[in-house]
Image 1: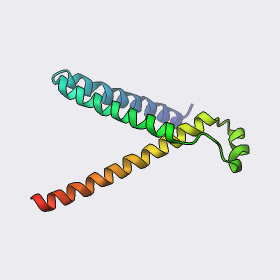
Image 2: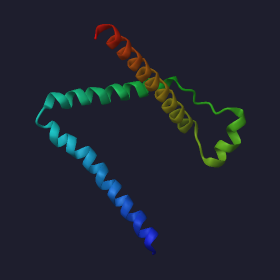
Image 3: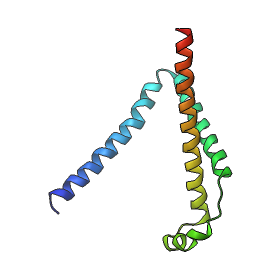
Image 4: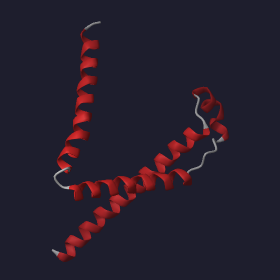
Length: 112
């Protein structure tokens, strides 16, 4: 084991500690304000519902040009639909974010 391996494992440890802190600290802080926790939960539920809609909208059939490659890599139709649903969700979220930015700029132009 050389210095690079030690550095990689130390980086993994630091990322894990940061991930735990990023999840646990806001939960501890939200105990002071349970209404804020409810708003966060509604946001997460909304994203899960959006993902479910996008998942069921996506196609699960693998195109003929990719069947051999998909079989070599072990990609099933479920995995293909999961990836497709994720991509559709990213499109929807990006379009909604861009529309919100445009709406905010237009609103601030006329009302400020």
